Image 1: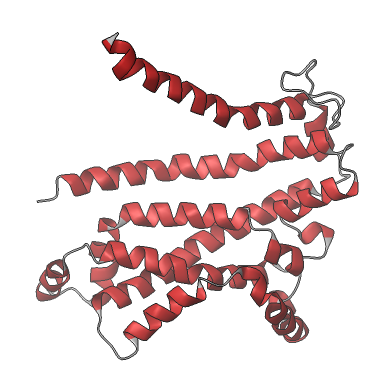
Image 2 (image 1 turned 60 degrees about the vertical axis):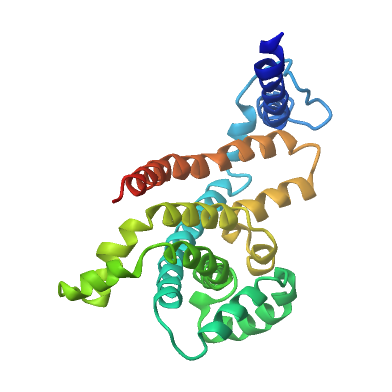
Amino acid sequence: MRYLKEVAWRHAVALVVTAFALFPIMYVVSAALNPLGTLGSTELLPTGASLDNFAVLFNGQQPFVNWFLNSVVIALFSAFAGLLISVAAAYAFSRMRFAGRRVGLLSILLIQMFPQFLAIVAIFIVFTEITELYPTFGFNQPWGLLVLYLGGALGVNTYLMKGFLDTVPKEIDESATMDGASHVQTFFRIILPLVGPVLAVTAMLSFIGTINEFLIANVFLRDTEAKTLAVGMYGMLTDKRDANFGPFAAATLLTAIPTVSLFLWLQKYIVSGLTAGAVKG
């Protein structure tokens, strides 16, 4: 009886939560393997299995490979370039005292409260001019979209990392300076290794946010081959929702591969950083 009160109910809750989380995944896997590939014929447990839906993605009818590469390249560049810019800004706000510091922090926080679609009109007007003057950074170009994402992620990433940098004692910087280290050496060789966990988490969140972003990419990317996965896959359902449901589910499973791979790669840095901080004297 004591086992039921203290342990068994926890296992029951865990099983219910696990089943609730696995239900949509099982449905997507069933739809991806469904040989008919339609919405009406898809069930939780598939009556048959084939890889035809995956083959449709690579038969040239849809530029799925282009969408996949566009999303991965843009998300990787956005995550790591944004991380470098944000951690430099966070270090300045955390360690230095200068005129406008408080106003700058409040402005960053205030800007993040406005939804993205408020900036769509301004973005469209600005990039119409940029497309005429500098086509490489204009519409339908990954570099232009990358610039937009870098600006959008700067605020929240800076705030997130500033809070973590505030927990690192300033005496470490002063000790390094007394030993002859420059500001650049202190930043790259001493501070960054100490804040590894927040760098890994921020990079992971930025990558997920960028690869799933739809609104700005849908306005910015108009050519079929220039689209990202979110925009391209949305078009698969709007054109022929019932007929393309199987390939859409297959594409959804393939979309998870880069995200899961990046998480597995960054996981060791998160764990090693936490354990290193736990024994730091």
